[in-house]
Image (cartoon, rainbow, N blue to C red; front, side):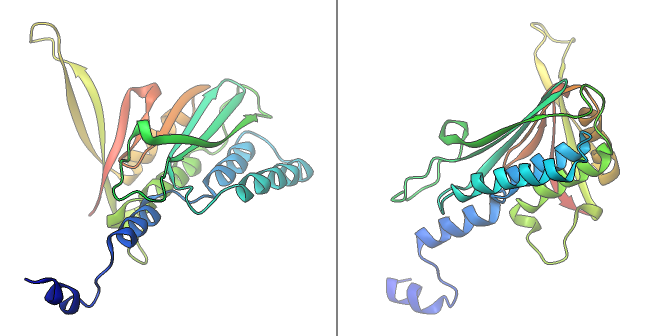
Length: 223
């Protein structure tokens, strides 16, 4: 097919830069993610003082004002160490003249971070199931295949992957062991981490890493 035919026969044709931009927009986490999770974690950690929450919200609004059109959130990291939780959002180090996307750990830069001092101290977070659902919904919405009106995680299957040592082989190499979970089982796995006094959870573009369990949740699919 010649160039003229290519340009005139495809009614929905898009230029390459626009295609890259649409892909980044549709698969990145919202720029409000840091603020939303910070306020949610503060409440789940026992904060009930309206004035304190309002002050936190004002501070976070100032952080949001520093974002630019090129700040695409590609990774969200939540790490708890007893009475403190640190939330970090990382973005793609974008060159406006880029022609391809090199989306990997090496090209991610820290956009912003917040340390939260939990009112409950080292006690377990409140209502971890609803917090787990919130994180899973956040991840689900970043997946291209889920971008359909009315979609939710209610009718999805997930995979839970751990690495196990293959004791039957020399050198004890590891192998991946996958378990298919329904949404309630996936929520339970994520909640298991969130209940701990020390956990490390990372939302990437491909999976939810449960570092404290040495496992990952991924492979969202419609039932």
